[in-house]
Amino acid sequence: MKKKGETKKISGEVKKPGINFIRNIIEKDLKTNAFAERKWTGSPAPASEFTNYTNIDSARIRTRFPPEPNGYLHLGHAKSICLNFGVAENYNGICHLRFDDTNPISEDDKYVKSILRSVKWLGFDWKRQLFFASDYFEYLYSFAILFIKNGDAFVDSMSFDEIKNYRGTLTTPGTDSPFRSRSVEENLDIFEKMRLGEFKDGSHVLRLKIDMKSPNINLRDPVIYRIRHEKHHKTGGKWCIYPMYDYTHCISDALENITHSLCTLEFEDHRVLYDWILTRLVNYKILEDPLPKQYEFSRLNLTHVVLSKRKLIQLVDEKHVDGWDDPRMPTLEGVKRRGYPPEGIKLFCEKIGVSKSDSLIDYTQLEDSVREILDQSCDRRFLILNPLKLIIENFPNDLEERCNATNHPKDSKKGEREILFTKEIWIEQTDFEKNPPKGFFRLYPGNKVRLKYGFIVECTGYDQDENGKIQKVFCRYFPESKSGISKSNTEKVKGNIHWLSSRHSIKCKVNLFDRLFLSADPLTKKDFLKELNPNSKTVKTALVEPSLINTPLGKQFQFERHGYFILDCFDEINNMPIFNRTVTLRDTWGKRSNETKGS
Ligand code: ATP
Ligand code: MG
Image 1 (cartoon, helix red, strand yellow):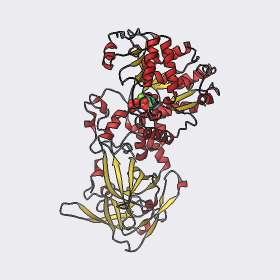
Image 2: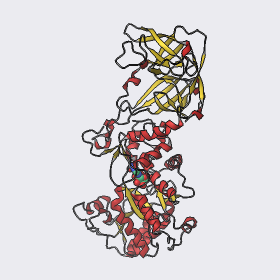
Image 3: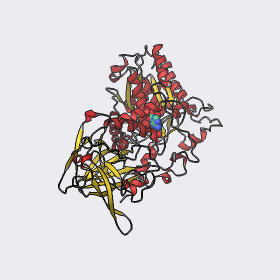
């Protein structure tokens, strides 16, 4: 599946679940009691909301999942959620859900709601540990004043472009800002006026005073506050200066007594800044050791999708998909509608493990985990995707023969259902060939097959139109051959096909999905939109067993030979249930043309 120009290794390897380098670190820390002495001792005194959890069980490990509410969660976030909540669960620790909401421009309450829904749907519980970085704005501001007072921060009044030009590059050092030597008094005065809203956006920023010559660009006097006259989804119009991510994140971790701050590899170079800020706060006697520690792991990259909020927003805004919860989307809202069970996603995350090496995981690995879960949980039913009429010549016109069909071949507790066998039935077009190729064991003139749970039939002929398209197939049945009942039912036939009574089947719509992108790694291409698969969705009218008419929304089935499906909604106008195919029974990527072509 790897194509030219795609550099990342596609991994099909399944690692031993459970053990990873993060868990090793945690186990070591638990052995050495590394966090046993943690408690808040700083000044200003902690707000009452912190004392709830900072003083109890301080030896416990604490992780956090810190989404920015500027989009919907995707499968990449699921990896982080499973890791953070997972290790907390494993080690009797606590995982916080903290919204990293420091940029009011792109953040919205609707994203907060959706993120809460998705974490819950995955099966994780933050209990009372739900926080917002914006709850700490007052702390962050008072700490910023301490940085200024200690000569560790200054107000810069250069423009955005000037700051950028002074920063230098990966190979050349930066240059000190002419405002770097402002007095503490002047800095305090301007910073207060920034807060009071006396300046326009972009006129001043607050920067840490670290080292413009540092080989690590993150240490070149990073900006920690900027002016934004914007309404914030939680604090409304209270603030017009907002703290930057790097400054906010480490302090939020420390305020919440996080022990292990797990993030993705792109933050590796930010770790020194994380430690620098917190160590300064220890020096100012605001925090005490042991401080939270940042550890990085590689992000999840999956073939044939994009896992970037910005790119996903583009797909929705430009209407390449039908919204955030389009079942083709790798968003958690999307895969939920697609029918991926949360247990399947968790199993997948466990199997791929956590490491520091960048890799591109084959999408089929996710599908395999989804199948593994659905195989156990789903009842079997019959669905005919491309119907062809089969007439049983020697079957009485009005007879309805009751047949017992097993709901689950590996779980007898799931019981049986009744399906009715009648003179006219539907079979799949692909189950009949007038000129069978070698090795074709299903219906063709003169051949016998078993109609699963029903009778053995022998093909006696067919009707075709002037183009040779098959209209009807004729056969005769053997009344003694009924499944499960007749003692003389010893005849073995090679073909075993599914069917539906034409009198008793009901119409439904099915959405069949394929890879969203043709390329395995679309973001490595010039224009990722050109890599979209034009056939990623096919809508068809099909037939199902009548019992499915009363199925509750969200119920999942295996439609035998076609895959796992979920009842998505009900088409009131055409009076038909609509099913989404979650996944086929086997990996058939690239070989799926036959079933979608039929009439
Ligand atoms: P995106 O790259 O999609 O914009 P983000 O990193 O900006 O995502 P955040 O809301 O900041 O999104 O992410 C919350 C947490 O999820 C972070 O700790 C981040 O490292 C983690 N995360 C995001 N994408 C992935 C991924 N593909 N694999 C693993 N973890 C991820
Ligand atoms: Mg982010």
